[in-house]
Length: 344
Ligand code: ADP
Ligand code: NA
Image (tube, rainbow, N blue to C red; front, top):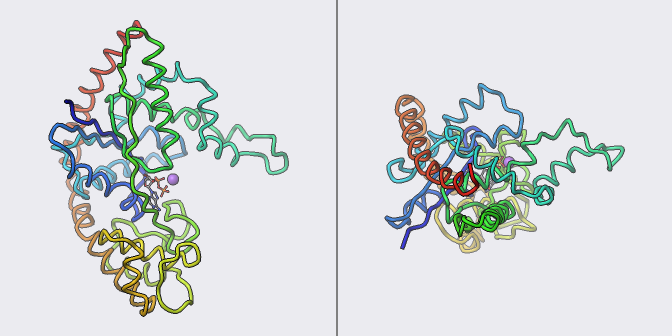
């Protein structure tokens, strides 16, 4: 029996924060560690997706390299896994075009990500009016590009969070439409399965009603993978909690303290409620000190690896080149078959 083909991607959006790390990237390392020898793993930095929002070219170029250094720094082994820049492999855009031509517009209109973009661009005075200058075509069609990212490798498993469930359904739909539209396709595309990443939502340290995010204006609200020990310490020390005595895990009524417990539990691979029992008679200061130590311990190695790799420009370029070559070889096999199936 053939192994699994596992594909996942992340946008080149600067140095990741603790939420990106605990919620997404650390899971890639676990998958790599637990993979069977016959499994194939592909991890892609999806630059074309980043273009759906305005980007500063200089920053995008730096972020692209930073994300590659990050992926290697956290322990993805480019000999074991195929690590590559999506935008180095044109098979993705060719397949996206082909898939776009079998994608009903209505399916894209139903994407909740699109609906929220639409909602955000409605005229404040007249709800029925959408400011179309705020909406580019890429924002509308990027779920098709995402399907192409996956199907180009005929991936069987896609580790992503629950927020991606609808997009993955679209990928399965498009695989199925392709398989049924072209009689000689037989079952060319496997229908990719979502490997739900256990939800480890890290909340903002300053506003625990929202998630930790790179776009929040207050930089104190997030811990970056590159933060020094003293930055980690000061950010956690000033994290918003509450004035109730003792520590309990109560995400609804005590989101700030519960977030700290979740972070600590994620670092030590425990259950937050179990961790809370150790702090029930202690103050928030005590908890914060331990979270600081645990986060520092977690990020110490990735941080120093990142700082080291960032200077190794020739090595990073080699990894990117080799990754792109391996990715192109695999996806070109798919594209040749697709072209032949559809008559090109
Ligand atoms: P951001 O919200 O900072 O812009 P992205 O949307 O680029 O982050 O997310 C990149 C990956 O990190 C996704 O898989 C997303 O689910 C995960 N992620 C982002 N923020 C968090 C968070 N606060 N907690 C857990 N996972 C997160
Ligand atoms: Na985001």
